[in-house]
Picture 1 (cartoon, rainbow, N blue to C red):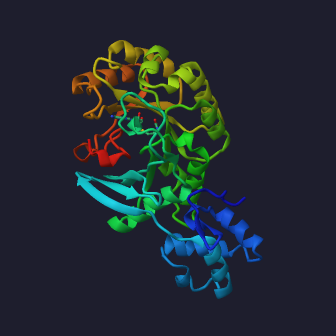
Picture 2 (cartoon, rainbow, N blue to C red):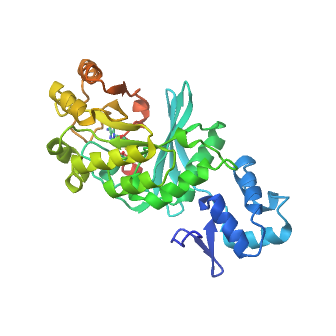
Picture 3 (cartoon, protein in one colour):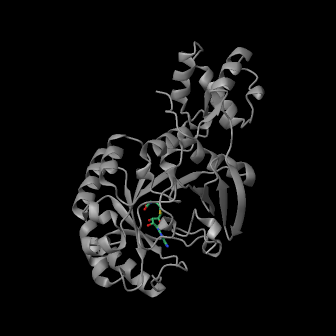
Length: 357
Ligand code: SAH
C-alpha cells in the first residue's frame, strides 16, 4: 500500500512527489519492490533519514546511484519550517509554518524522566469543547503523517535533544485523523528509525467511540487517554459536544472492550473547572463510573484562557477531589502544570496565531 496522493504532494514536471517522511518502513519496502529494487534498501533509507538524519538523497552513499535517481523522481525530502520558539520554565513552544502556510504548534516539555513532545494532529479542531482554546479555529485540514514526524525531527535538531515520549495532545482530535495518526505512530515507533517505544506514546481522544473500537483491535502497545471531564452525560454534554453523539454508557463500554483486548491501563483526563465539575458529588459519581477498571484519573488544573469564562478550581478543591477518589480506590494523579507563561499548556495552543488575541 503506497500513500494515497494528497494535495500536499508536490507536483514537479507532471510527476507527483510524495514526502518520504510519511512512509512507514513497510510502505518503503513495498515501493522499492514495485520499482524492481531490493526491499532491504528501505532499512538503509530509514538509517539515513532517522539515525544519521541527512537532508539529501545524495548523502545516502550506500544506496546506489540508480536507486537514488529513481527515489529522487518520486520522493521529496521537504520540511515544514519553524517560525518561532517561546521558552518558559522546562517548556518550549514551537510555531510551524506548513507548505500551504497553515500554522500549527508543538510543545516540548522537560521532565525528570526525559523529554516529551506534545504533537498537533490537525490544523484547527472540530470538536468544539467549550473550555478549549485550540477548538476556536474550526478544522482546516488533517495533518499528514510526514508533518507530524517533522514536528519531532525539527525540534530535536533545533533543541539538540532526543525526545523520549510523545503525547498526541496538541491541536486537533487524533481520532478524527485516525489513519495519518496511526501511520505517524508506526513511523516514530520503528526501531530501524526513530525508535520511540510504543509505551512512551500516548494518544488522547475526546471519545470518538467507533475509533476507540478500531484502536482496540489494532494491538499497538500505545497508551490511550480519554478526555472525560464530567461524571455524567448531562454535564458532559454541556462541556463537550461529542457527548451528544456518544453517551457515557457507549464510551465506557468501548473502553472496557479495549481494556479486555489489550490490558493496558487507560488514563482518564479530568479538567478541574471551578464550580462546574469539581464538587464532592462529582468525585463520588466519577469513582462509581470507574470502579474496578484498570484505569487512572489525571486531574488537570484548568489553564485559564482570555476568551473563555471558566475558572480554575482552587488547590484546596483539587486536593479534596483527589482525596475522595483515593478513598474510593481510584488511582489518581494531579497533572503538573506546564507552560502557562507561554500559552503552551493544554488547551491553550492555537492555530490562528495571527489574530494574536
Ligand atoms: N482532542 C484530544 C487531544 C487534545 S487536548 C482530546 O480531546 O483528548 C489534550 C487535553 O487537554 C485534553 O484532555 C483536553 O480536554 C485538555 N484541555 C483542553 N483545554 C484545556 C485547558 N484550557 N486547560 C487544561 N486542559 C485542557
